[in-house]
Image (tube, rainbow, N blue to C red; front, side, top):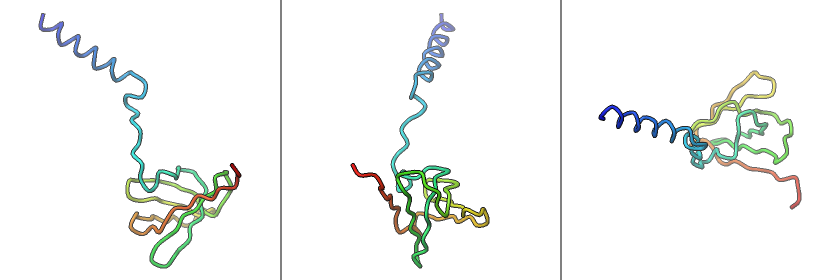
Length: 102
């Protein structure tokens, strides 16, 4: 009888993990939530910090987002020569430029 209880518990756990969205919990929003890996962006050195901007349309720009962490973002220039790791404390802002009228 005891084995059946463990087997039932195991089946319930496996079934619950197979529910769509159970493992894909929504990622918490942070400063980098508007960026995606592979996205074209413009990087501007503001002296003590960087500014990142992008368009709502997919347009080729000077840099691409290579990696996004919890507290950093990595961008690579279009030539593939220079990668820049930008920690969150060195970021002045992220700007989305809208080209479409609503």
